[in-house]
Length: 194
Image (tube, rainbow, N blue to C red; front, side, top):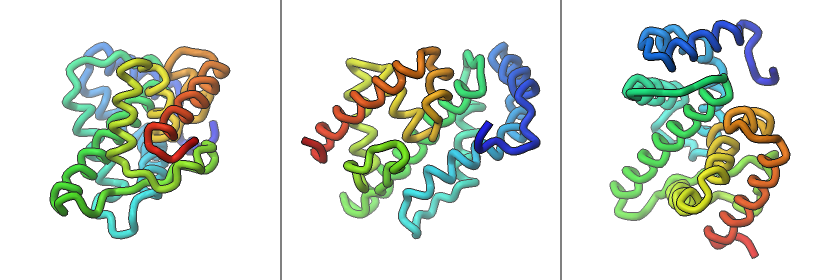
């Protein structure tokens, strides 16, 4: 698995995910050290697009995600990719909440910006406002939740096409098609596309 540390044990992670899904709150506590490096990779990717003076650090983002995971009442996670997708959604929420609070603190100024990864072929969306992207994703989810999740997992979670397919239980071809259509829709919504 690319980006996965050598100490990563997929069977241990799967067993802990299943136990957590079945209501074992302690399983999440035991799971975090197993997946920490992977979460750090995802969080670092998210934070790489933030301004250098951003006060939220990668470790703090992971800790905030953990707090939100603990607060979840019930989960149905069957795979590592689904777990990373859930963490991606929570990271998105944390970053958007932070961006909104910064925006309000500065009375509309200093919006937090992120750069979409070039490897994901969204270079036309250079430096979008994170709050605007979140609002556009919410509008997309209102009529096509799956396409919204594809963007969320790929952009916010840094999941590969294959991991996104696994997390959503759809084919790689469907992910690629949804990604292409959602990207075009977002470009138009954000006023950066034709």
